[in-house]
Structures are given as structure tokens and as C-alpha cells.
Image (tube, rainbow, N blue to C red; front, side, top):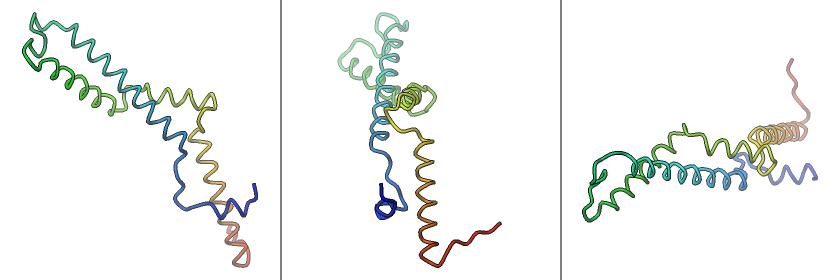
Length: 129
């Protein structure tokens, strides 16, 4: 790729990699769904008597679903489960998405090139040792 073309298309606020953003969102959704299934199973097997945690009356299933969903959201948002993080690590390892380290290195190289190009346009590089 022509360095000047790359220089013209760079911005000071680089956009996140679309593939990585999509993978992070999908991994988070998977983790939340997994936690919700686990919470639902735990609630159903807990001993709350014959009535269950929310009773047997009208709306008890709605309260149970609401409870499962919100507890799963809270647990997943704590970032302590680790399923989403591990999925992203595996995707990086298999080359499906760029790693954070690769992105940081690419951004650093772009900033270095931009600095050098601007310095050359202003009469040279100012190197301090």
C-alpha cells in the first residue's frame, strides 16, 4: 500500500475494527445467554417448596423470566465470568479477528509514520538523545 495513501486515510481517532466489535458483541451475548440458562436451571432446581420461588399464581412465570434475565445481565456485566473473554482469545489465536496487540502495533506504526512525514514537511526530523 502506498504510504501517502495510507497517510491521507488515517485519522487521529481510529475507528475500532468492525470484525472485532462484532465478535465482542456476539461473545458477550453468548456469555449472557449461557449465564441465563445456568441461572434458570439453578432457580428451577432450588428447593422453594411446591410453590417455587415466585409461587404458582398468574404472572409467576413472567417474574421468573424477568429474574433470570436481569440476574444474567448483572452477572455477565461484572466481567468475572470470562466466557466472552476466552472466546475472543480463541478467535485471535485462530486469526479470525485481529488481536489487540496487533491493532496497537499497527496504530503505533501509523502514528510514527505520520510524525515522520510531518517532520519532513517542516524541514526535517528533530531527534533528541
